[in-house]
Every structure is written in structure tokens, then in C-alpha cells.
Length: 169
Image 1 (cartoon, rainbow, N blue to C red):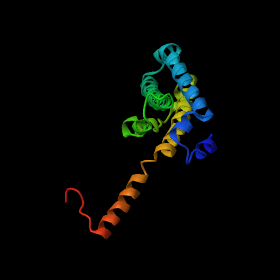
Image 2: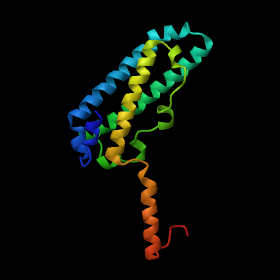
Image 3: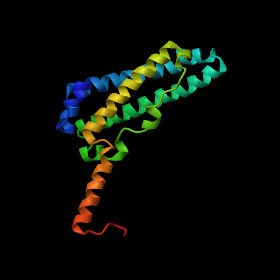
Image 4: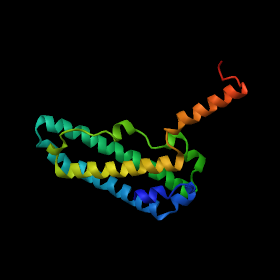
């Protein structure tokens, strides 16, 4: 899958959203959302009732993390689908508003997850893998946030070289 992501360099957003990679990722993401919702509303809820207090608190936090990951992933995938279907302009999809968010929560990991029910642990791993894959796609398609300081540095040097006034100076 990583090789698929690396092959996206130079691809347009429209060609990506029409690709088999996008379709596989979209289908996987939406299926994982449904599977997780069924688990957390059913079997997971029952399992959580029987957990010791400390583990129940961990369960609550990690179930919120998996939900946040999947909602962020699903939102991103739905935006890309809207671009593909012509319901959204690619320039709108590039705005920060529609980029993958909540990275500090979604990329975090709790310790001692071994005490959690097996199904939740599996959902945590799979949602983390999906979220990280989509984060790579987001960075490749729209440019990573790490590029901003470099660009700002170049602009600053150009302004110094050409004597341009900085806004607000």
C-alpha cells in the first residue's frame, strides 16, 4: 500500500479519486466505520460493563480515539468522493477545513491496551493503520504541513533580497 501512495506524486486529485486505490481505501474506511459502530453499540457496550474500573476508563478513552480516527477518515474520504462526483471543487478540498484533522488525538496511543477486549484492540490497530494511510495520502495530494516553514523561509529570504516590506511591518 505504501508503494501505491508513493506512486501518487504528480497525480491530480481527480485522477486519484477515480483510482482503484481510492475505491479500496473508501470501501475499507466505510466498512470499518460500520463495523466499529456495531461493536461499540452492541457487544462492546456489554463487554465494557464487565471491566474493572481502571480498564473501563481506558476502554472509554480508546473507544473515543477509535471513533475520532474513523470520523476524521470518513470525512476526508467523503470530501474526496464529492470532488470525484463533481459536487466539490478540488480547490475547496485542499483547504485546511477539509484536510485530515485531530492528528494529536488520532496518532496517540495508550499504554496497557492489552487489558482491553480483543475486538477493541483489533479495531484500534486497523483504525490506526487506515488513519496513517490517509494521512500519507493527504500529505502527498495536498502537501504536508511540514512544508510550510520551508516555504516561509524562502519567502522571507526573497523579501530580504528584494527589499520587500513584510506585511504589518
